[in-house]
Image 1: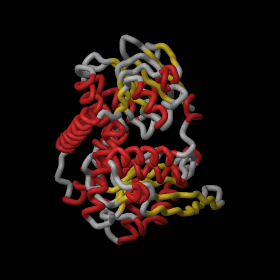
Image 2: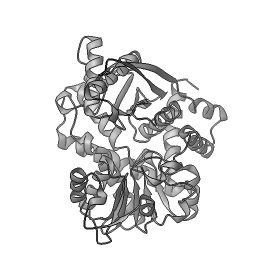
Image 3: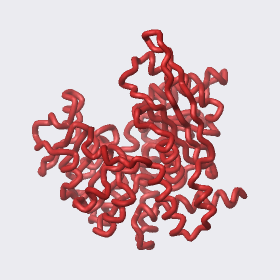
Length: 420
């Protein structure tokens, strides 16, 4: 486990509400608008019965939070984890509302989860759990209603089971009901790289404004899963120097730079980045406190908090994970002149790729992979530039600037529709 995991916020919903409150106050909106937006429109809780391989029946709790639909159908992932709670799912659905609004996607925010350790289930048990969960929430999802996607410990195979279960219920294939599907079922290869690529593009855009470009800048990546690896890979290809990376077992550091592909190969073959021979072993906490140009926390929420924020030496933090910097840490970092590029901007590549897949499904598979990647890049560049331009005029931290743009767009849609 990460050393900092003990400091993970006990209630992520409180973090989400605090961030919303700051944006509402900055925009000068009425208190009743805050009260409306802090509550999800709907939360579904289901008990999922699974007949296990030993013949016994186990029951798991699952949720789907649908936060706001002013801009369109709910959109957001489904995770399988023992850390899942109703508060976490609600908070994540709220963050998805702002992420989708900021990227100017025609979506509201949703999120789902099942409280389970998927590593303890056989493939057959996992399939039963997935199908039974999706069947239980099927009344509330749909191509124009709520479109789930992969998240923590779910993947394209999980989405294939969801798609098949829902299509069986309808009696015909509904390809757009989920995104992040296997390519043979209408998915796109860019979904695999999209979040990490988005983090890299956002980092490059911000570096061009704050650091005179990305070339030669030092990078530390905490969390070397899918997002962290691809962010490191693409930033290295852009000319940056990745000097440190870590996973749940610890980190490695080499001031001369690391080869992201070689580190990834070591992790796959030997179980962890710490087994990479051409680097010094460090802890996750040490990685967070390195003196680098850009720090990319791509693991879990709350790793930069009031306990360690004053020891952070990076010039810019780009949030590859959801909520890795707490609201208390935000204030400390801002006062110390450290810029935090917020998650709703930095890691939006995944949902942007999901939107491209969803549109592609609905119009009959008209995009090539190359065209899809170009659309993804253009969307992220435009979003980043809008946030940076607004932030430079606002004299507030970049998170508040981004949240304010997103909240303003949602509120405008709610007013035009006559909801408030």
